Image (cartoon, rainbow, N blue to C red):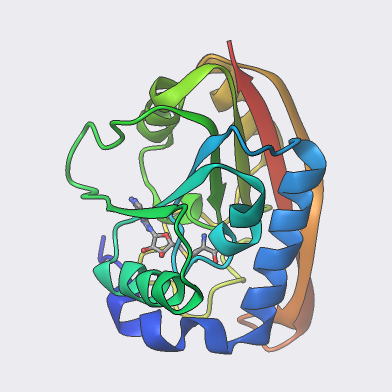
Amino acid sequence: MEQRDFDKDAASYDMKPGRVKLAQDVATSIMDAVKLNSDMDILDFGCGTGLVTLQLQPFVRTITGADSSHGMLDVLRAKIAERKLTNIKTEFIDPEKSVVLKNKYYLVVCSMTLHHVKELVHIFHEFHNCLLPGGQICIADLDSDEGEFHRDKTGVVHSGFDRAEMRRLLIAGGFQDVRDVTAASVVRESSDGRSREFTVFLMTGRRC
Ligand SMILES: C[S@@+](CC[C@H](N)C(=O)[O-])C[C@H]1O[C@@H](n2cnc3c(N)ncnc32)[C@H](O)[C@@H]1O
């Protein structure tokens, strides 16, 4: 399956107000679900241009933005430099490598990225391995959308997710206290030209 070229999109990624609003809603939902504090080192997997990263950054010790697109990471690095932020690290992820995450975190967040990741069992294993005991996971992504959310479907390997199935995968992957809420909704024209509401869930869990 062809990968989406996020490098090409990086410079203009933040220009869509709907994307910025969605990231803000997701960050608010994360902060409602997890009490962030200044002792926490956290990971934003698939951080993109850092729309969620930068919302969480003021409340934690460090946040690592990890992404498989150099272009997206370059945009985030430019924001870090411009704002003179000292507690954000960036990490390139090679999606071809089987072990990708080396450090340990109290929290892993992952917003609007998993629908681009084919092997969910593998990535949940990675998330579990990089969490400290008792650490938490927050996944935000689309509810099942019948393939209508993305007009450009390049690199989209899941047409949203069924929450019950994702919950089952997380529990099988060693997470407990798995819960979900609706974090955001987006109204946009679907591929048949009609206006439709798409919802985004936040699913949380704790490493056993
Ligand atoms: C739709 S963007 C979401 C960006 C950001 N999380 C947000 O909410 O604004 C998806 C991001 O996931 C990244 N990505 C896709 N597949 C990935 C993988 N296997 N590993 C790491 N990052 C990935 C892309 O490069 C892109 O930056």
